[in-house]
Image 1: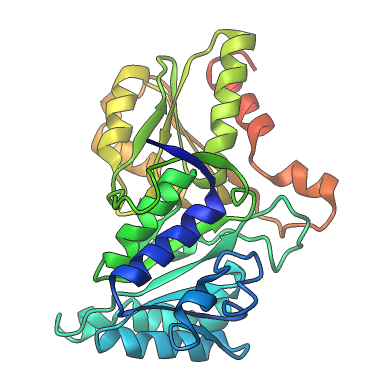
Image 2: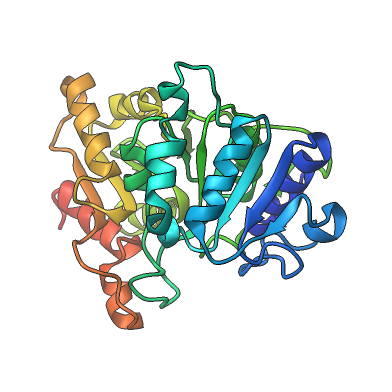
Length: 330
């Protein structure tokens, strides 16, 4: 029987269950031990597994990602927590030049079963250096899988799949998702959500909205309001996995609706939305009744001011406005 839990608890349970199942799984990062992580995602894991499997590190992302890479190469399965995904940039060489490329450069002799997870995104007034979204950056480099679940069920199932994967997987959490609630299977029940498979969250006939992570929740809210206020029925596709990307589910939806809008919180410029739109034109241009569009962050740094931050975040209000424009009602 399903039970309700929070997103943050679902992530915690996935790590705990996999650490119980496989002794090669361990957690490494800043304040992940006794403190339980800045956002309390690793809470209580230190008490059960101890300091050898829940490792607190100095403030050096480059160092502990290098350590995680080394352990993964010899058969361990590290889960690396980045306190903020913004700190990706501190360890960019380790991630994009070493972790992403090691299997290729070793001719397939070395695998890197490593997960990088942590929170990103705006909405908390954390400012430019703690509010960015990195899905576009991570998806640009070959050798890394990228997932961004929008609900507790997918968070637990996708993280389980990521930990078991023999390739590097980046698991993106949005800070505003942590205390959202949803159904998950009973405690102890083993399940995975396959990486690379999208899901239709809302049926519709007029337009397809493709999104993921917290933006997916905003798209669903926008779709319900568009239905009630304007009679527009949007189909909402949860991409879930950015790399690999399930375009077939998107195209199946587009075949019904003929219109496409890709929405995400990372920058629109050279972003995931642009990729979705480009693939739609390349793979099935005949399905489009009107020009496909994308909605992402404008090319500005994220401000601390609540009013300014809300103005630039591509959330419900902006989604509704663009859909009305696309439907000729703007």
